[in-house]
Image 1 (cartoon, rainbow, N blue to C red):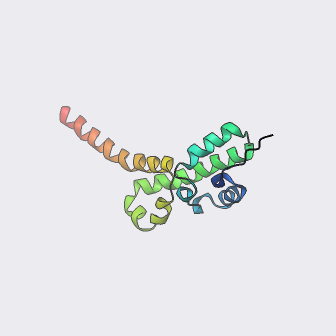
Image 2 (cartoon, one colour; image 1 turned 45 degrees about the vertical axis):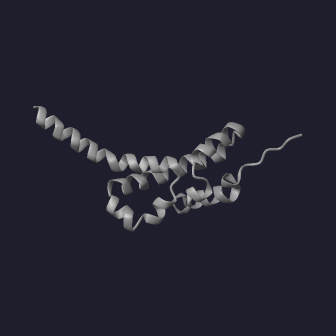
Length: 115
């Protein structure tokens, strides 16, 4: 008989910390690709509790990440510790939130030039 345990980043102590305050957990320290690991774990274990925790964690953190992405100056001062703790998925979200206003501005300027 073979048993498969949850990997350390998905252990109950981490899940409890995420339930208590998703923004206080350094996901990068748990695993650089935390959400990808979670998806693989959920392929093996169909645990509704873990699904709910990961979903709520991403939802909660995504709002804060987007705020920091739109206000990069604040991210460099007040939120630097938070940003260091982002996993790769969250870092991509931050970059997208940070870059989109510049992209819209460039598009708008190009549109004005052509009309």
